[in-house]
Length: 137
Image 1 (tube, rainbow, N blue to C red):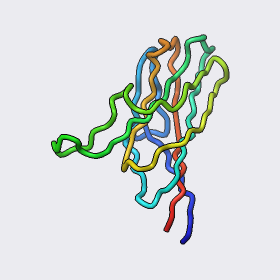
Image 2: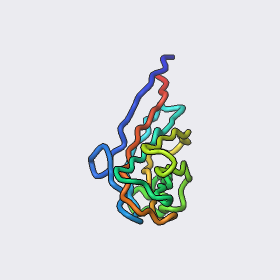
Image 3: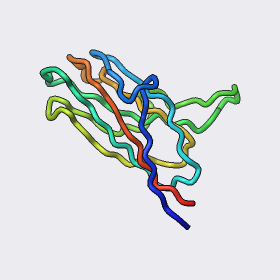
Image 4: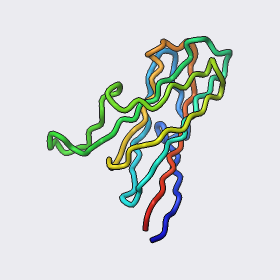
């Protein structure tokens, strides 16, 4: 059995990074997990391009989809603040602020949700991420 490492760029409206505006939220495009994936991590980055304020923190959430719970025909995801809390990316402490977190792998797809409303960010913050999977073949 061969084990491979695969990296996937998370996109935000098809771009490699997204801007979480002042006191706002932003959700990534859907990310599919390969059926052969047995371990995964997400590497997240928050970049403040101005002088950071003490409240310039982004909470990063994992919004998983287990498919279509009500049979309506489309995949549904955890609520924006009902998913798995991955990290607080604090650009006042350091910018850019980077953090890696383990991901659960049983779900077929997920989105990342950047939340700047929890602390009421003063500045817009650029967010980006990559997913690293270990796959078995």
